[in-house]
View 1 (cartoon, rainbow, N blue to C red):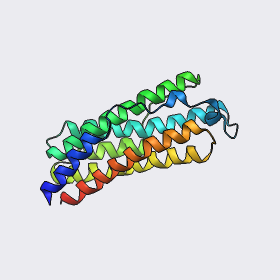
View 2: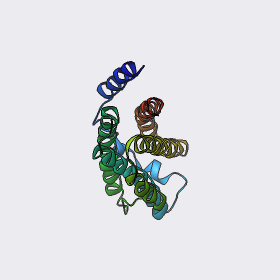
View 3: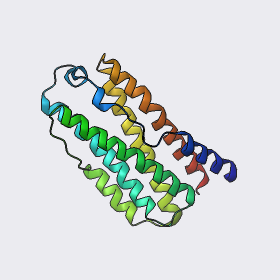
View 4: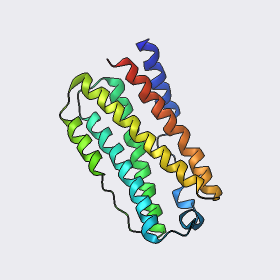
Length: 181
């Protein structure tokens, strides 16, 4: 069982693009102006995405710096690449729309990172994987929510591009969770 999982994880890491462009900069104003929210609302939406993304970065950095199983470390490395790319694209989007942009973690996420920092061994790994899965779920919900509020074809393309990798990442996290007792 463990050997086949490791092969699946390696396959996932090799087949998913590490630095593909998500095309944020191609999203036109129709997305950000749908429903005519104020600039502060648009900025808040970007800030929420950035906060969730920042949590993903912090989780990955923490796991990379710990003596964890190789599979967990590989997953953390892949996650770090992905979340850094999202962060870069979010900054570019905010700049192109001349919106304020912050990369602040949510207070609950800061608390979760603090608790995770104090854990060791299998308990650290299980908690890391649970938090990573929840983080991916939050991102998927926000992207799908944005896609539902617009007729922007570029945004729809973005969601269909980003969702499969997020779902694959989340599936890898869930599968890895079953091997760590």
